[in-house]
Image 1 (cartoon, rainbow, N blue to C red):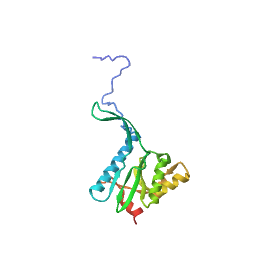
Image 2 (cartoon, rainbow, N blue to C red):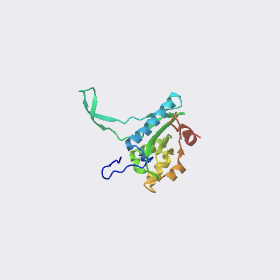
Image 3 (cartoon, rainbow, N blue to C red):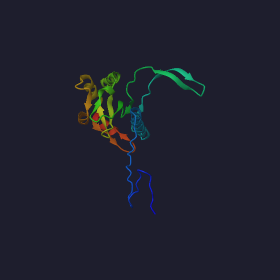
Image 4 (cartoon, rainbow, N blue to C red):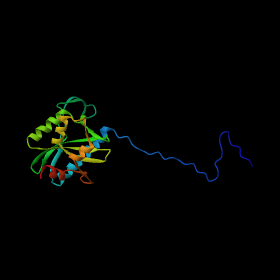
Length: 199
């Protein structure tokens, strides 16, 4: 018996299996979400330090002025604005010393852009340094899968002199310190604070 196939359709040879190409799934993560994930991990690390009585470091709240609130379904803020420009993300006390730092994340494959640092943060960190506080940046390099502690004194100097518009990763590695990553705490940066600022 002969089987007639529609025009253009041909039978597969026996044993022939159609190969499927598996599509690789790569979720797109927005800059905001990436930054929030980094911030959440630092918050958890800071909570670990508090729970183990190693330091008291917390996220600084951003002051806002509330203009409108919708009370129809509970209290929901519908309009607000920032009262003052933000300074840095975190501050606290460690071994009797004031500690202040900013957390930044970059997807660049070559450098950390200075455009990520507003002037008011530089001014704030300069004041902290002038009064003997410990100040630094935690910079997450997504493309390298590495995070560095970079002293604020270096960043302030680079920001003011502007030899270029970004800090190359080579410079970051030379002047910064690789933060140990683990499970708990996720970012164990206090041993580096000891090494860099409290020798």
